[in-house]
Length: 208
Image (cartoon, rainbow, N blue to C red; front, top):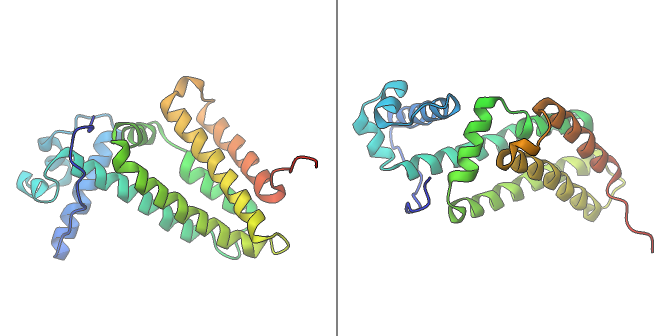
């Protein structure tokens, strides 16, 4: 648990070889956590193929390492959204891609996500989560405006909100209380059906 650590800043490598070191350390840490291995400095250095001093240069404590893993995970998600949500992408294909990015997790990825989402202090993660959700909503809205030209911007925003809430809420609940969640493949298919219905049809308004 990282509750008492000071919020770190991201590493700022200045040379190409330094960037490679940072990337190698982050990938090694991700692999070790997914494999449920102990994340010692020695194990991290061995897996990354770098010296222990190089790790401490960019990640002076576990908090700095975990915070950067958290940031990189969400940065990768947004980049993947940009690659998938193209004007020619159908609603079915776009929903499938986004749901799988968030919810189709291997056992190792589940361990990794649980550590990042549960172990990190809330005051570290909240602002970043708000930023990522806002960026994801912007990308979804921009894409759906093209595919749903007859819907108002307000209605599309409503559908985007509920789509994100459905998937994010289900994934977080499955991480916090896995005993309540259906089998992962079933959950992914259920989420795809629910989100596609919301995107295409919206949420029915109450009768006036």
